[in-house]
Length: 101
Image (cartoon, one colour):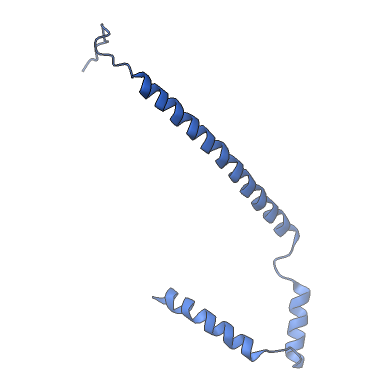
C-alpha cells in the first residue's frame, strides 16, 4: 500500500486560539510540577546517599556490644525486664497473625 502525499491544505485542521492557550497553560503547569518534583527527588536522593555513606563506615554489628551482652548472659548479670518483654510480645502478636494468613 502506497501512501500518497497531501496536495492541498483542505485536509489540515488548525487549532483555535483558545486551544493553543490551554496547551500553553497546561505545559507551564507541567513544567512547574516537574521543577518541584526534581527538587524533592534531589533532597531525598541526598539523604539516601548520606545514609549509604554512613552505613559503609559504621559496622552492621557492634561486635564489642555483642561480646558484652554474651558475657553478661553467661554470668547471669544481664538485666531482664519481664514486663517489657511481655508488652512487646503482645504488641507483636497482631502482626504475626496478620502475616500468617
